[in-house]
View 1: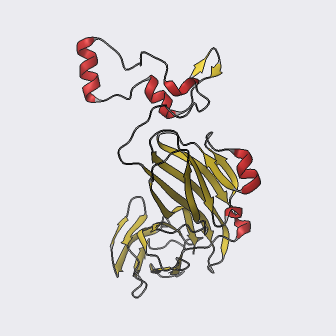
View 2: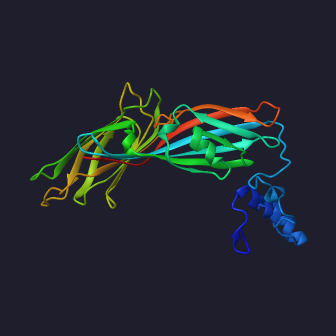
View 3: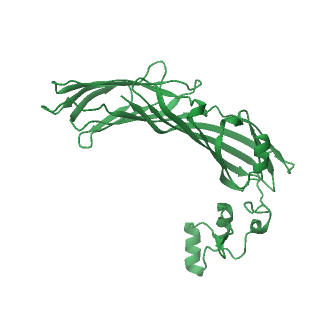
Length: 303
């Protein structure tokens, strides 16, 4: 929100106080009374030294939750070597604390983080000198920071794909086999696995048998989708079968690439770990919770 050309409020908590988010009840009341969702007065926090937090916040249950979510982007070549890999991470917070709490969050290994972007509430000088996050949090949900872990730090690849995709020159049949397995997951389960592959134009149909999950091949778009689900390390999921190719055409110039989607709960693949969360300025003891999650961003395996 701009005031005379200057940014006055960019914090969503303050904007929600200025203009109440629409609900069905509010819409009905506004229709009857002719009023609007725009607040009558300037929010209390707007003119304070902590413009992102409204004053006089009260909760019966005081709790602070932090979600460390990492997305891994990677390209793996034919032989299983990593061509590029990087992690985009965020720490999302949901803080419901009474009064004006002052929080500090420290990590086991803060040196991992480069290219960090903070919420305005973070005291940057303290981060620069001690690598500790010190802040008075906004009320409710907000993104505390986003960061980047680049390939220089040798990003761990959590899954691997074994593949055997072959087309013969003279034959109108091809072979298709892929197996997915966990690699560096610290014993955590890989779930929500989805494999997609854009097949060459010459492929008319595919006759495949999955060891688990369901698969669909669309003969028009030539897209193969295999919904794997969870990976059981004792019995790795595989998809095997044959491909029917258009008669008389030469074999495709290149093999298809395989794209993966997956989730791993309670693991930050970069190895980032929160050490402790402390609160100052208020007397009560809050409930604190931290969750980790890794998921695939653009994760591609070349065959």
